[in-house]
Image 1 (cartoon, rainbow, N blue to C red):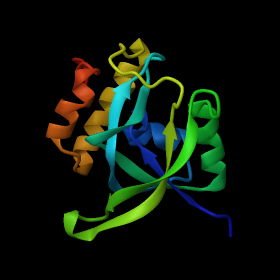
Image 2 (cartoon, rainbow, N blue to C red):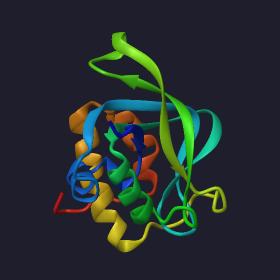
Image 3 (tube, helix red, strand yellow):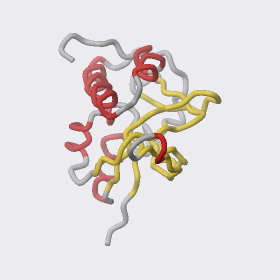
Length: 158
């Protein structure tokens, strides 16, 4: 049996439809949190996470086949745009009382680590679709407002 990996999707891969298109064998598992990291838009105009004490990043957690992971590597520009790190995240299966610590793949841009850049125009729509899915899956509006909405404007069509 081929090995599976857990993937922490924190940017436009919050959008479940995009993940299904990129990784057709993926299995959505639930929401997860990366403690002491911060969500940013870096100079490339895409989401990144950086270590930041006291901050947090929420994401959708997916199980990926080896084939899906290879597809995702290509979409994410590994190893030029992002590198894969295995990090411990808090996984919430069905509510906070079920929290587990698991190791997940987190795609991190280790070269471009300053935030505050404007997002790529095409990225705004994908992020808004992802934000809608994140909220529907239980990621809090407080988190979305504090981190994602600082960089991603709401658009009328969403």
